Length: 267
Image 1 (tube, helix red, strand yellow):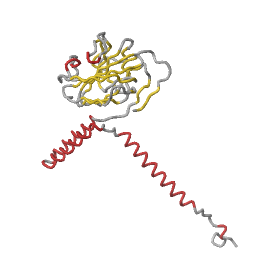
Image 2 (cartoon, rainbow, N blue to C red; image 1 turned 180 degrees about the vertical axis):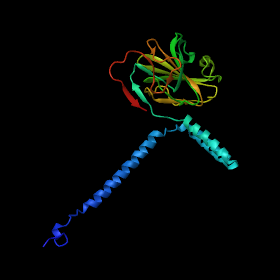
Image 3 (cartoon, helix red, strand yellow; image 1 turned 120 degrees about the vertical axis):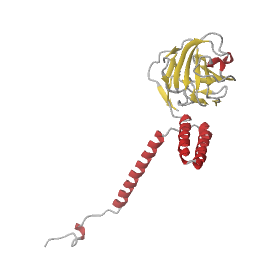
Image 4 (tube, rainbow, N blue to C red; image 1 turned 90 degrees about the horizontal axis):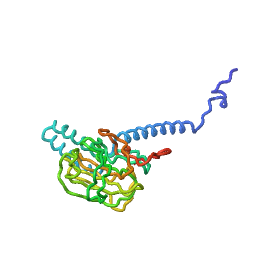
C-alpha cells in the first residue's frame, strides 16, 4: 500500500510559522525602499527656493488666484510668472573646491570683465590697481551670492547710487553697491555686489569679523545684477571673457599651482 501525505502526518510538506511573516516583511521592506527611492529622486530633482523668495512666490500665486477668479485663462498666465519667480529664487547645492589658493565664482552668470583697475575707495584696499573679475547675472541666473575664498570678513561697506545696466563698466562707479573685504591667506580681497537696471534690492547676511568659507552663501541681489571680485598681486585669472560661471564651483582665479587632490565641500 502506498503511503500518502494525508495518511502519514510526517510526510506532508513542512510549514514554518515564520515564513508568511518573513515574506510579508520583505514585501513591505521593498515597498518602503521603493518609496524612499522615489522620494529621494523627487527631492534631488526639485531645487529648493531661498526663503527670501517666499513672499514674492506667495504674492504671485495669490495674484494668479485673483486673476483666475476674474478670467480663468489669466490664472494660468499668472502661474507661469509664479513658477518663474520660484525659479529665480532657487538655491541649489554646490560642490566647492576647498583650496586656499583658488578663487571661486561668487555668482552664476557670464564673465563680463577681466582687467586691472583701482578698487572702490570705500573698500580701503589702496590706490594700486587690482585684478577685477566681474560676473554679470541676468534675470534667469541663480542670484544667491557665495564667498569666493575662505577667510575673515574685515568690513562691509554700502554705497547708494543709480541703477544703470549692471553689465556696463560705469556701473562699478555709479550704481548702488555693497562691498565686502575679506582677509585671506593671500591678503585682502574685495567682493562687491552691484545693483542693476532691474535689481533694486541688495541683501547681505554677513557681518564684520565673522569667518567665512569658500562657497558659503553671504547675500542675494533681486532681479539682475553683477558681482566684482578684486584680487591682489599674485592672482592669475582662470576664466575668459564671455565664459559662463557657476557660483561656488567655477574657479575664476588662482594664486598658486595647486598640488595634490582638491577636497570639495557641498553647500
